[in-house]
Image (cartoon, rainbow, N blue to C red; front, side, top):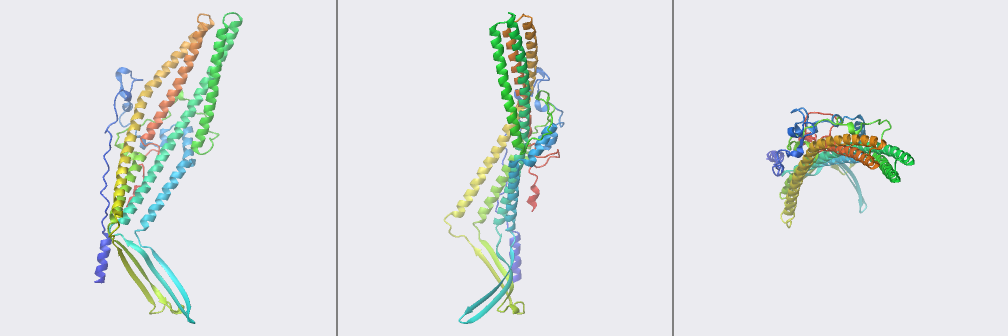
Amino acid sequence: MKRKLLSVLCAVALSACSLDPAYQRPAAPVSAAWPAGDAYQTRASTGASAAQPASSASPSGAAPFAADIGWRDFFKDARLQKLIALALDNNRDLRVAALQVAEYEAQYRITRAALAPTVDAGGSLTNTRSSGVVSRSSSVSVGTTSWEIDFFGRLRSLKQQALENYLSTQASRTSTQLTLVADVATDYLQLLSDEALLKISTDTAKANQSTYDLTVSMMKIGSSSLQDVREAQTSLASARASVASYTRAVAQDRNNLSAEIGCPLPDDLGEGPTLLDSDSMFAEVDAGVPSDLLARRPDIIEAEHTLKGANANIGAARAAFFPKIELTATAGTASTSLSQLFKAGTGAWTFAPSITMPIFDYGSNKASLDVAKIEKDIDVADYEKAIQTAFKEVANALAGRATYVDQVQADHDYVTSAQDYYDLAQARYQTGTDSFLTLLTAQRTLYTAQEQLVTDQLAKLSNQVTLYKVLGGGWSEASHAAQDAAGHETLTAR
């Protein structure tokens, strides 16, 4: 009978059902396709009458999805690759994120260990004296202390919650890496931009210096007025101020980049490309469809693991309404004499199961269950918000990818026209055909056009980095086949 009862108890323990609610992924509260319209079409290369969607710029299947492209393959500039590698090795925020992953993995192992009994070995030797009589006792035992038999799945629910928390933290670490890679690239582009603007300002200051010297010479022979000299002097002072401003900006950009990578900038970084000739800095990517984000974007994966953890917490809260069964058992030897401890007849054992049944708790368990359900509802809202945020970010980046092509092309045309205007005005001024005001206007127009081109080129390239990031790219070094960005689901089999 005892053996049958023990077999029944073991069978019940092994087949105990979980009280976790059946998990169902909430429906994505966004459209099944990206927005369409004029903002998502480019006309720079085909003309206004032959507009094509930006996503159709390359043949179908030619551009892989962003999350499948390693950052070394997306960022083609060798200097930028070196900076990103340094940041991944030295950035403190990423290091903290990795340590947090290790911490939650250890917490998961602690929670998982609670499912198995803890076996301890112990021994004691006691000497007492009472009424002039000395008595001695000794014992050696092996046993388990307060092992909770998980009939109703409370510990398994807590284990599942700990696992989901770990996976959520791992996805958060991946998200931190994506942000870091994108930030390093953006800071690098800002440095290139300010270096280009510094060169333009320096060249403009030299041109203004030449114009000023020419105007002074012409005034001496009566071909120019004092007003022309003062206007040339004003333009020269403005150009010098711009040189000082961009010199400061370049120094600050280098400081920002150094802080981002977590170490000083390498001395052998070498020369980089200019923003005016940098269309080949990045690989082409495909935006895919919104549903791809659910499996590729780490912040959405993080939110879903958090939601699954809240779902498991409901099971643990439900299990609190049922009895808690604990078992304490030991086996060993006990004797009044140490020399007799392991001889026949000194065996000793204890078997002490206990059961705790909640009866009156003044609504504590009910309140705990309500809290668990409310927390899940909050996590559902957070998950849906993460999807909506991702959809918005990708849609905005897609609108930028198309419109920046047209904008930068128009800037190129503006610079070309402004350069022709300046060359013509300078030649006509030197021959006395046009006034100095015309030359001055041409100089300012050219500088404005060049500055606008660099600014918009920076915005275009930064938008490409943003698109790569918001599509979930940058979490791996090399390109590979599509897979879950968290990449650690095998732990669920433990």
